[in-house]
Amino acid sequence: MPDEQEFRRAADAALDALKRHLIAREEDEQAAFEVEEQGGVLNVLFEEPGTRFVITPNAPVHQIWISALATSFKLDWDSATNGFALVRTGETLTALVDRLIGEYHAD
Image (tube, rainbow, N blue to C red; front, side):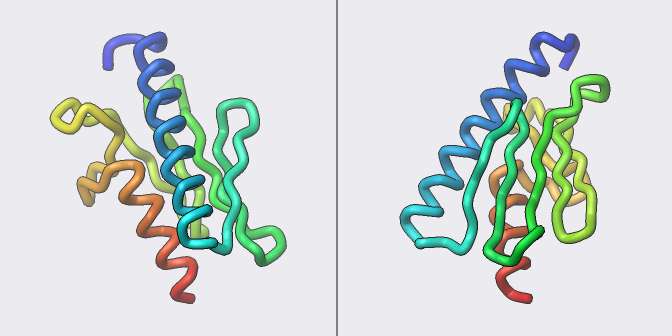
């Protein structure tokens, strides 16, 4: 991804799509989480007080960062899928967040 403006457009679109996906899950599954957006940052809030996933664009390095389950995940732009993905697993942004929510609920 060559420049910051392109990154911002792609990150905004990816986070918007993720937010819509999570809101649909929230409604369909009556999930035990809520989604909030604050200043371009998505927060997935769980019923347990203080438990949240934070999903934020990091423009200087052109990545989307996720803080979840005491771990930091850094997703890079993947031109093959035309989206952000976790390099070591190949998971897309949405697939990774879905997996992390599942792991949180499994504990």
